[in-house]
Length: 266
Image 1 (cartoon, rainbow, N blue to C red):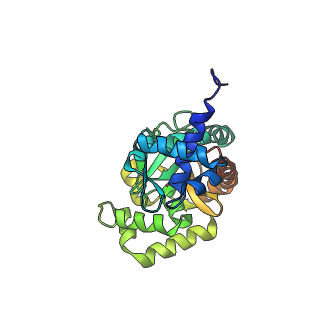
Image 2 (tube, rainbow, N blue to C red):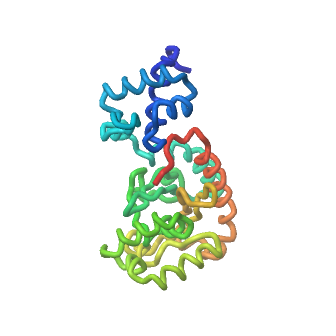
Image 3 (cartoon, rainbow, N blue to C red):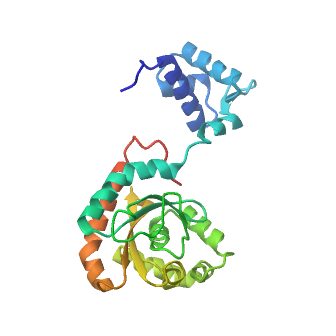
């Protein structure tokens, strides 16, 4: 509960700024209708934002556009921290079910950034804290995301990895092999960590599989399960654990798709 009553006028100004940001060169009338306030109030709030340097007014046609200063409002925002906070209870519940640890990651241009992890609370203690950047083409997290993400993110990932070293990045330079692999992942619903990455990162002692976290049919994140090779075979592990991981991903997707998430990770 808030310590003080909210300043309604301040909230309305923020609503006006959001409207200017979302609409394409709106007039004051369009802003008023979008926010649900009268025209005179909209004009006063727009002029306040102009005075503060957050909005620019085009004198010729009376439209408003956001300025570069609005970027300062998001400078402290880190999407993976918000996503991680939302996903944490689901990862904890999954770990109680299966005992093995999981990571949830979101795409961040040239890597999958770990938003939350249950490592350290289970059988594995490899250091993978939130904020760790995992290679897209080497990890099951990255491959699951690539198989189900939007084409723009897929192209960005390919362009980012095609010039990088690492045996797993050969996929980014081989369109035919990549499309076949992504098609196989879509067909079975999960991806596997590459042998090259397992060897380099874990001395081949660890493997993982991942599933996408889908909102409206599109991947916003991916969720893995990380296991040692010794206790059981891969087929047995997937047979036992795939459904619990998919169920956790579905619950996370519902939470990420809720209006409470202030920004969709991209």
